[in-house]
Image (cartoon, rainbow, N blue to C red):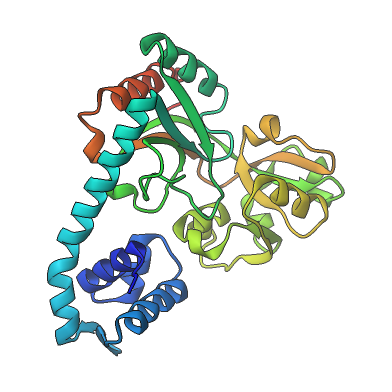
Length: 301
């Protein structure tokens, strides 16, 4: 019987929290998606792991037995996976760097060039991730280090250094009445349909819908997309608008889409992230140093 390690990770967090809502927030996933994953694990194991009530999620006897053993199993598996992939990348002299959208903006090329200078013979392999994978493969060990938009799922369990901060703007259909305005208060966008990331991206999706800055006003979802091209098409075709970093106006310019500054919403941050197990990896740490030295002056926070 095969069990996805992701299901086990979700199980551990629910067991620790004893509450689906808190566990979903900690995992940066939607609560219905988390409930589905727990039921799937129970179905695969053929046992009931939790007793559900208004008070929360209480472990059954089989659930307690599993909870005692799973953390060590996951830790060992993650260590073995990381060491195997690290050995493979070192043998090939390849550093795998995950990234979202425009990575570290214009600084990305400088980072890669400086790393090549520091590590002759090494190559940086940039791997772009879909928005449904906001850690860009870092959580699964598919990459060694990542350039990410903050916040992202599992951020508390990783090392993160902020590289730059930039305002969040809004991407609008060029035909939208607000497209000609110089500055748009976010409050005036609350009732607009938004193009959103998939629900499984959890808190990352909520951040780009700015749900914490709506004073309880729920967002309207006009379309759900997982890739920049689909996101741009949905906006250009009038299915909705979307918050975006200021740099999107440079990196994702497209006919039919207009970018405008927004007031009343917090800025976006980009960080370099890596697993604690790579604190002693000299190649990863060289890349991190290249990132820190390439930070634009006065744009971090």
